[in-house]
Amino acid sequence: MAAAASDCHGDPAPVIALLRTGTLPSIGSGLSPLRGNAERWWRLLATLASLDLTAARAVEPHLDALTILDQAGIVPEPGTVWGVFAAESPDTKLVAVDDGRWRLEGTKPWCSLAGQIDRAIVTAHVDGGRRAFAVDLRLPQVRVAEAHWHSRGLRQVPSGPVHFDGAPAEPVGAAGWYLQRPGFAAGGIGVAACWFGGAVGLYRSLHSAALRREPDQLALAWLGEADRLLAGAAALLADAARRADGGTATWIHAHRVRGQVEALCRRILDISGQAGGPRPLAFDEDHARRVADLGLYIRQHHAARDDAALGRLLLEEDRPW
Image (cartoon, rainbow, N blue to C red; front, side, top):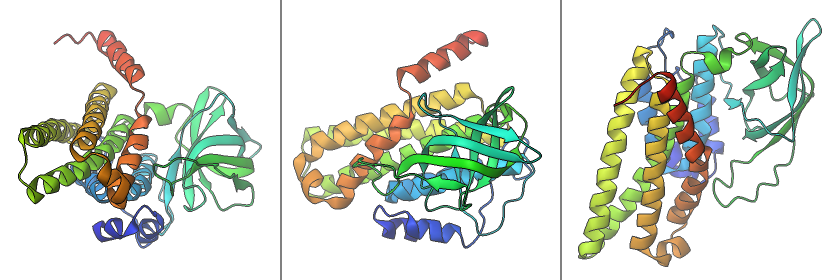
């Protein structure tokens, strides 16, 4: 898979084709029969992201979906590639109705790669909250809308709306289960592993540039700072992997990891720009794409809002240092 990531150059198609050749195991959780996989799969995601963030962006939701299905006791059809569409928008709403069989009605926003993958776990509104459903994206009752995707980052990973017109769907857990299930926090950390890999890719560019000519004090300082920040984030991810495999990873741990890794990425993006100047952004296609991809990808973090959520959890659980 690393070879496919190296060769994709921002195109997810080769990675998606590779996923169709066989089903990967889930990353595991405390209640999953496939335990002990979090470190393995987060390392895989970081490795893919260090080579090409588009590759990781295609693989991460597939792994997350397989984990969710495993927790719900559902076996996916072999050779299918999955996504997870759980975002909400004030402008659209997706509801699930039960007329003897569950059906999805409405629009779901931010559905990455919906036109290229096979199935998805989609959250929809039901009486009592939101509920997850598995749906075949190739049904005639499913229409992938044009994304109008103007982003310079993750350009070939459009995340537009999908319209459902009575599409049959299979429940995945009870109402509210998706957000409350063991492993939900671990899925959020998996995304941070992708961000971390993108930062590693930028670090490698810094390191290579320092080897090509005698570095001055600023170049050495930037390289040292980047290494120090990566080491700290790697330690947090390793600790989170142990907790995920033991079933003790909570959103306190997830917010800590995601916040630290997002801050690391912002700083390495800044260091990379100062150290390299305009030349690599203007003339190095892979570097320019990585900078744009990472800048967009980390915006899945909600910045101070996620810190506020962490603060609330700390007060609720009364956790002073």
